[in-house]
Length: 329
Image (cartoon, rainbow, N blue to C red):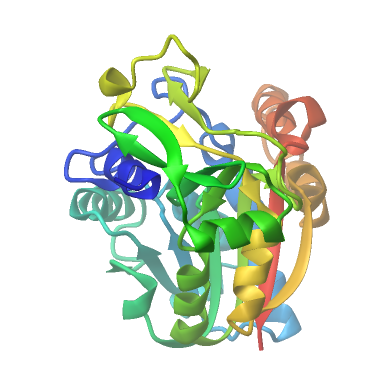
């Protein structure tokens, strides 16, 4: 089978890794910015409010998270909107795009527990089901979870059992590799369809996403497996793929030039790519910390400050993760 089919089954099959609830953070297989600090969502809330104040977003706009997993990220955004501009909670619409019913159920229960009937949450299984006039889309670590093909010096990989063999001629993969100056590595599958679905779902929107990678492609393979916070290169000779299949996360570095091209082809304007550290500071994370400092005990402030440092320090998540932003007017 194609490697993209193998990866799809690994992550999203009936018994795939993401098909059921998974812990993220200390008790899980990896950390994310969302599991690190609520102030990640706080920055997005502050940015949404600024978009409303600037007139880009209407007060009844749709706020949509894609691939929300627990739903914690959107819940953090809502919590900070309530703190900073509570009246918007009565007008904004909140949506999660989630294909798995088990995760929809978990998210619904979490929102009911967190907000009661104050916040109404709507689910769709895909962007193609959503139709709106004005929206803000947010996603965290979504592009690295798209299936990919593996390419090596003119040949595309296939999977035989759990063995990888580079012996397929695939012109689409070869053209993408040429476009992004790769003689080996991962070629993501599905960015173009995803961008078009978003463009077709809404007349005017901003989309912001955070992921690890660079604008230009890496010159080698970055595919790796996460299990209990241990990272193993996919091509490590000692790994047993049959034992890790669907029981661990598999991911790779994003080539943001590919994401950019996909959105521009769908008629959506690329705004910027910047390090997560810069993006969060620009959106006001330090201002949020100042507000916290003025309203809580020093001990609580210091605890939250240390969490925020993980988000923005270059030696943690601040430099390796990037924010990419698009707009359709």
